[in-house]
Length: 396
Image (cartoon, rainbow, N blue to C red):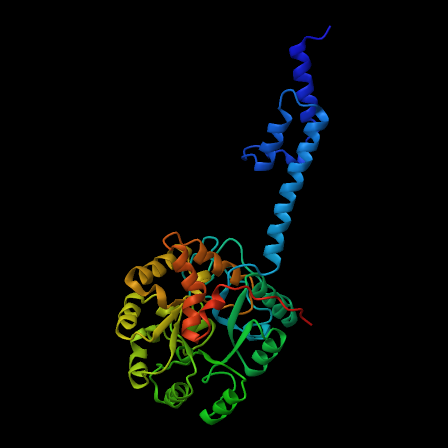
């Protein structure tokens, strides 16, 4: 004769065996909501086995629905809009064949010393300019680079000021005109006189002058050779984005022999702003690491904006956050704009976004300003566009 208490235990044990093993938490991890609900149902006293089984199926179906909804949101661009002020339409060959793999700040980054007896390398064994546990590789082809980048722009609901050689920018713009805001520099790639740029702007070939790379050419932004282009930008009301900050580590040895760290100084931009008070300018990389100088410039020149591009994935995250916090706490949270400085490593976009999202000292309003509203104001776009979803279009 079976003891009634033993029969109850056997019944509950039999019911628990109906739960799939996949729903059991690995050792040492907390059970999920789904696991807890199933356990609660399975242990209900006085409920017939079929009733409990149906209740378990309903719970699983409900959670599955939530997962599908979340996945749908992820894949259809339901993120609040982002404006990326610094993205590149580049080719892989511009960075070497193949391009080096890079470090990102979702892990520890270290800048080791260089023994000059051996060549400096961005990656590889020995004499690395930058070191990390896991490096990010570029796609295998230019077509993959374009497709992967556009996919991430759609996934995160991004419109991006995209600079590079005019033919590449045009190609990218044709591929995703709703995502790409075309930009060209006036001091790099194909050299043109101001009148040629005037005509290109009139034809709608570009909307922003960026990235102005005078620092890589060993020039101050106040150099006389650039003056006609700043005058044109002021006349036609073309926004200008100028590189002021770090390049790749060891830039003068690995990238551009004319690069000089002293040209990072935001004070070098002052005469340009005074000569052209109606010029819209943003300092890419916020003059990093010379944050105090940038604070003085932002205070003295209210038309000046900054972006946080590159620094938000290339600098150690604590270091980047210390810079960002300094800018925000000094009162300039309305003039900081998001940028990825994505070159040929599309996943840097994701890491850059995470760097802003993980900044615990920012409230949600400040994040929305940095991600979208400040850039919309600077570019004179409709601010309501920062609250609406951009429909993903079919791509050829």
